[in-house]
Amino acid sequence: MLNAVIDLWESGGNEVVSARQVSANAAVPVSSIYHHFGSLEQLLVLAQEQAQACARDWCETRLDQLAGFSADARAFAPFFAATIDDWVHQQRRLAFAWREGQMLRIDGEPGMQMRLGWRQLWAAFWQEACDRFGLGDRAWLAEHLFENESFVHMIGWHRAVDRAGLDEFARGVSAWMSGEPVPPAPWRDFARTEALRATPVMPSHDGTTSRIAAATAALIEEAGPSGVTHRAVAERTDLTLGVVSHKLRTKTDLLQAGYEAVYLTAVIRLREHTSTISPATADATLDGLADFMSQSLRGQGVHALHLAVARDPALRPFGLQLRYLRGMTSGSLLAMLRPDRAEPSHLEAALLSSFLSSLPRMHADDAPGDARPRIRQAIENMVSLL
Image (tube, rainbow, N blue to C red; front, side):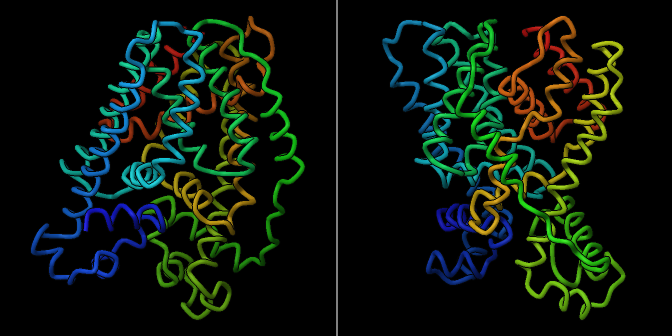
C-alpha cells in the first residue's frame, strides 16, 4: 500500500490518491488501509517516510562512491549535474514523491515533520558532499540550487540539450561557489532562443471562459489541482454549474485553462513587482525581494504547473519556457544587487532565479514573523558570496 501511494504520486499526483485507488493499485480491500494505518492521511505520512528512507539510501550510496576521492573543487560541477540527472531519471518516483510531499495539505506536527524530513535529508547530503570537495562552507548554496534545479530538470524538452544545459548550469553553480566568473553557456543560450521563438500562443477566451480560467487558477494556487472541480469553479465565479461544464467540459479542460492562467499570472506578477523595486540601494532591492518571496510561501500554482508539465505531454509546450526562460527578470535584479559589476549573463540570471525560486518552498513552514527575515538573510548571504 505504501508503494502504491508512491506510484500514484508519480503517475498522477495527490489528486488521484484516494482510498479506492490505493486499494485497486495495491490489490487489497479498502478496509485494509484503515486496519493497518487508521486513516488515509496517516498512510500518506508513512508513504512519505518510506520515500525519504529510500532517498536517504540513495544519498548514502552516492556519497560512498566518493570514498578515497581527494578534495578538489574543480570536480564539483560534474558531480552536481550527475546527481540531479540520476535523481530525476533513475529515481523519478522518489522525485515526484518529494515534490508532491511539499504540496500535501497535512497540517500540524505530522505535516511539519514530513516536510522537515526532506529538508534535513538534503541539507545533510549537500553538507557532506561539499565537505568532500573542500566547499563545506558553501553547502547551503548548493542545497538551494539543487532544490530548484532538480525540480526544473523533471521537465523534459530534448534530452541531449537538457543534459548539456544542466552541465552548463552546474558549471555556473561551481563558479558561484568558488568565486570565479560564470562561464559561457551556449547550449542554454540555444534553448533560450528556441523558447522565445516557440512561446505558445494562449487561446483567446471569451469573457466567461476567462473568468472560469482565473477562478481555476486561484483554486490551484490555494489547494492544488485536487481542489479543482466544476462545482467549486461555479461557486467561485457565481456561474451555474451548467455554464462552467458547457465552456470546459472535463476536469482536464479546466486544469489546462487554469495552468495557462497560472503561467500568465506568475510572469506578469513577477515583472510588475520587479519594476516597482527601487534600484537606489542594494538594501532596498533586498527588502523588495524578501517581501515578494515571503508572500509566496504557501502558494501552489506554479509548483503544480511544474509537476503537471513534467508528467503530461499535452502541457509540454510550457516546458521549454518554464525551463529556459528563467531569469528574464532576475538579470535586472542581479544588476541592482551588484551595480559595480558587468551586466549578468543569461546563465547567471538563471542561477539567481533558481536560488530565489527555492526560498518559498524551503521556508514554507516558518512562523509568519520568521519567514521574511530568514529569506532576506539568505538572499543577503548569496549576494555577499558573489
